[in-house]
Length: 129
Image 1: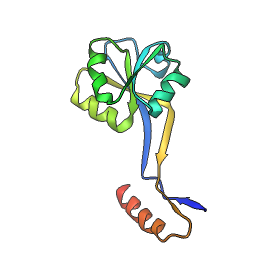
Image 2: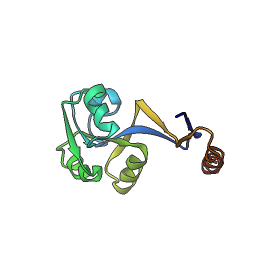
Image 3: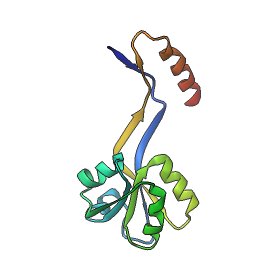
């Protein structure tokens, strides 16, 4: 069965939360570091396979890793754009770094021939204004 995708409704990216006084200032600085991630997330894959972290510390809830960053148990937290923005705003003593090697677009998939696609795209257009 053929499927169609709607227009993009969200553009995601990865960010790292780090100690602003630490030595991590870019994605390259993450190699060989201890990185916290949410288990089974894209950040988990990226930390293990792309960044080549020294150790990937996995959490069910990524917010639980903030204390580990603050006490120095992990060097960075790798997470998605929206969650990074929230945790950064709630914790004034951490910094956010954009990870440029990864991004993804969020869409909705519908069956080909469905009138739903035009209705969803109309809502997406309003949402993206």
